[in-house]
Image (cartoon, rainbow, N blue to C red):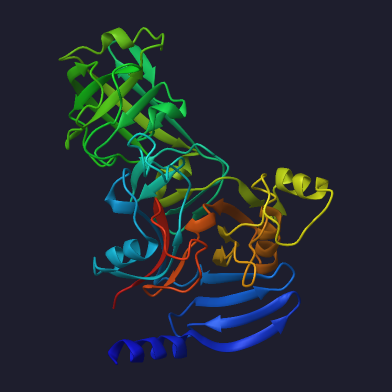
Length: 399
């Protein structure tokens, strides 16, 4: 009986008003959730697609943008709802809305399930570096929104030599010649002995931050692979094929300095940041590549899935903003009688319709999830909530 009452109360709070507008029907959801927050379901009849949208006022001081890493470490996955509940349990803020985050390794992939492929900064800690530098979004401590192209510049000085650092907490198969593994990855590096050597470093204060300079000491050099990551240090993986004079200087007892910074410099002030894949909007205009692919399509079939993912109608998740608002959008898909999904061009067009001037594409498909106040309110295409790699939150201060 208690569960029945809770469900009825949830539905009564959920839908309050319906507005018919060009292209579809808009239903307001959770009108009393928080000041400065507006949520609605948008039934877009152009493509028979159902979207869930939240608009957050950038001028409401009690509302915040945050991200969270699944399982509190890179190697591991978790549902969006579980991450939201875990954040709320900290007690200082309550998660009002949560959606799935970026792309990465969802399968096991030789023990690397959970690895992100783009930027993640959480509570000021740099966990993974930017790769698709155009598709990153960050918020500084002062509340400034950033989506300018961002790059990491990092190196390890040892003796009179300098070794460029390419990646943080990434798979060695992702193209980096030099990767730094922090305890945020997991217990060990998951590498093997065939492709590289590993240098165990001590003396590096954690967490790693976007603007970081500190001395380190070489505790050990190993060619066995899968090194244990010290809780008070890091492991440096170096590809055996790398030809750099600094490599021979990494010997037990040697010391040097790790220097890391993000560029442009305003990114060093970021408190929370996430990376996606493909920028959807820049200065109010749709990404030229996405637009060209859309206009080159010879025949448009509503709701059709395609081998080219940009042109395929799929579940989608996106983040956008303008001078006044932050937008989070989840489009359901792969459910013909309910919602077929969107192409990236259509997703970008809807974001413009909402008023966004900047936007990035987050992970979609079965990962697309829209959680409000601890409940999943969309219909994920896998028929159940999927374990994902990270999540995006709108939180409110707890009074």
